[in-house]
Image (tube, rainbow, N blue to C red):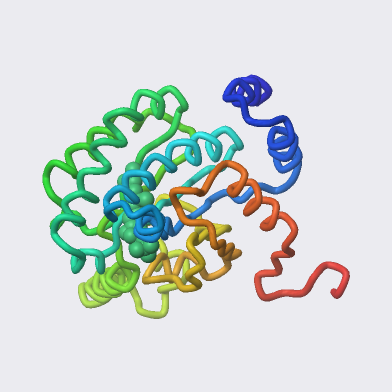
Length: 263
Ligand code: FPP
């Protein structure tokens, strides 16, 4: 880990941020961080640039956040890159968004392999353009032997449809006599979701000042700590991630029980 920190220091961040990172790592880190990367459009608008320029800048912000999360020992980072509702945006914007995974992975894949990151994707594949899926699947394959942080792209993802599909699949199993309805519990239900291979997120970050979930991981976020920030996603930096983790570490997580001093 020390080696990792030395590597990180070489990126010339101010010492104060290094100190905060080292301090954070002494405490319970969130195992799984989920991020709703919002505010790309407004970022571009403020600069009189086209919305797609904001998405491009947003894509660039993914790289340092992934690198820092991985180096701090986060086990999974899920990024909401495209929702099932985003198809109603102008075609030009949708087409552009669907090119970003290729561009991102085209340049960043060697570093992800080197960093021991495992690339995954969750979402409804059938509507995703072939060129986008190809780039993602190439990255998934190229990193499948890695055992470090999972970088999980939510692409054409919608939580309600994920939940409905789980319900349908469980109902079929019951109908076929493979499962009794009373046997269905949290673990069985979770195993039918697209995140069956991941623990639930402990920390949800949403940028840009919006305070809603937008059909994102509704089941999986049941006990997550929520961190909302006004920062627009393209401006979200290492310091903002550290601030969110520091906030997470200050909160007391009781999972519906009592604080230890109250029991
Ligand atoms: C929401 O901002 C953001 C999106 C719909 C797309 C998010 C995608 C990225 C940040 C890039 C993904 C990168 C990779 C590597 C796949 P918005 O456009 O709704 O912003 P606004 O609310 O300000 O209009």
